[in-house]
Length: 200
Ligand code: VGL
Ligand code: ZN
Image (tube, rainbow, N blue to C red; front, side):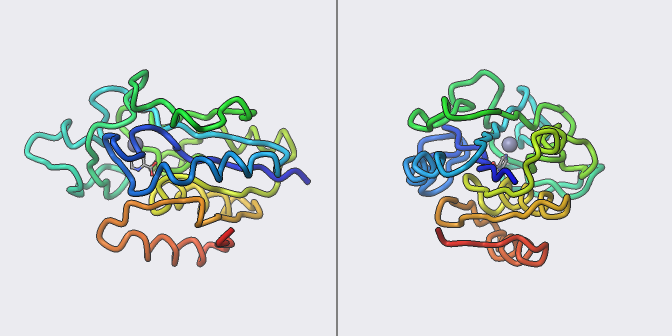
């Protein structure tokens, strides 16, 4: 059995000073690096939106960041412009040990659909390709860390558990946005999906 570390969206825009900064996002970089050697595979995800993406408030006249609108696939939080393909902010945090990664998977490139999960876009149907990669490598257990705990880590972990992976989230190596109770909802949802939440 191979156990992979999945490092979610440790990018400049999600760290202090970035466009969608998560409080303390930079604090987890060094401890994540230190965990990498403990796993048989290391996979990084990278939020990677085209300019004018439909998840940006700036794409919806009259809407503000953090407003929620209905999209064909369900409710969508509107975000400040962030992680635009090729931008400085879309890059990984400078201290993240990216050389240790076996795979970098980019998500959110479809202009019409957001993609919080590393496995499926927010329609919960369009695959990113990660499941196929893990299956062909025989990887059955996943530990997830990164940003943001209540959005991309949450969606990725719930999908992983639904797909049958033995899934663990190390909450000490995550930081969250916490929008309108999203943190409590995420922790409850992950537990309900069978995800193991661990402090270390
Ligand atoms: C994320 C909001 C928008 C995340 C990505 O990485 O959690 N959150 N895009
Ligand atoms: Zn995004």
